[in-house]
Amino acid sequence: MFDISKVKGVIFDYGGTIDSNGTHWAEVLWSAYQQFNIPVTKEVFREAYVYGERYLATHPVIKPEHNFGDLLKEKVRLQISYLVSNNFLEQSDKTEEYILAISNQCYNFARDIISEEKTIIECLRKKYPMVLVSNFYGNIHAVLEDFGLLGYFDDIIESAVVGVRKPDPAIFGLGVEKIGLPAENIVVIGDSNSKDIVPATKVGCQTIWLKGPGWGDDDPNATADLVITDFMELKSAFELNK
Image: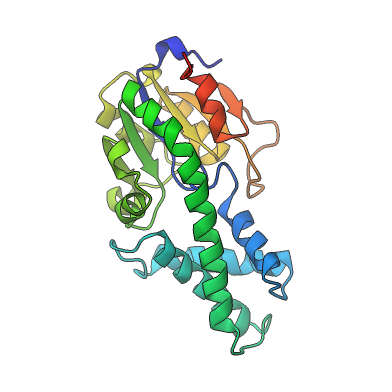
């Protein structure tokens, strides 16, 4: 059970939590594929998505200065390249149009969501020390700066920098160390039960699960100290209207 009276610090996940309100980014991208009538099935798209994520995890494509728009273009370019090279999609003059249209659509989606959420993040920042803990590509500072979020966090723990990835609980342990409070006085907010909630619980933190359309890898019976379905519910969870 979530106990607001014990909370003295906050750890946020980023991708899927702050930038998409609980929706897994594969689902956001797939919606854009559908909107622009990319002629592939969802099953094939998932193959392309996984290929792109694995490629980015092992190749230094993303540079520290890349903002989210740059990152999306690289992601979608890898996906489209996979689809073309495996004959799921024909190479054509539209290929580059697809990349730009999908990446721009998804960038605007994230920008609009973050714009709405900033009031909540700002209020939390005034009440608590906050640290970001994220599996990311080495460019999280540029992404946060582009969206006007960088100043809200006292520190940032990024997997590509510290060499530890979720679901290893050690990455949340680093976040707890940065805040400098007992884990029981820190709440972790994330969109993945398996990658955020379970490891955060193992280090002794309270947890809030932003449960949205996920990847399908979370136990349907999983839970957290508090489960919400909309980022804006944090307003009432933290009694920010008082």
